[in-house]
Length: 211
Image (cartoon, rainbow, N blue to C red):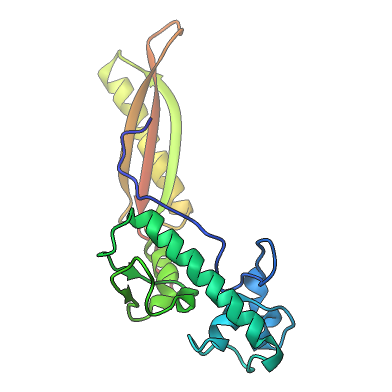
């Protein structure tokens, strides 16, 4: 048991690269060459959404012979989304649904169980924005005495902090803004001398690239 507040997450196998008729499978990063709208031969949910008029993606129109099958896929996807919304909302229909990410255009403008579907400006790059503002971090675990000479113990802890900060910088953090964001001690048993496991985490914004 962990005493932390965490968001409730429900994942379903539905994305722009999801292959129609597969169990479940995706073309992933190859969507730009395999999807029908990009001249490929693999029917994906991106093709289905484009055929349904939910977005304009790709370089070619969806072949007419695929439209009926793609329409069935859209209906199945809509049912899966509505079921997921109902499960997450616990029966409440007064909450909005915020659609972000590259596959957000797959969603209909009205989703059963949601008050409205909100599509923020530039929602298609929301995931990229999250990655761009993420902090770079570094961690260090070591063992230090639980007690003893104050200066000796303090020096070991300071060394651990410096090493964690150095690891954060090596991971891409700006040296001028790195901070110690976590410092914890866990008592260890069955040792000749009292000791603790020291866990240190440092983090900071990504350093700006020169040029």
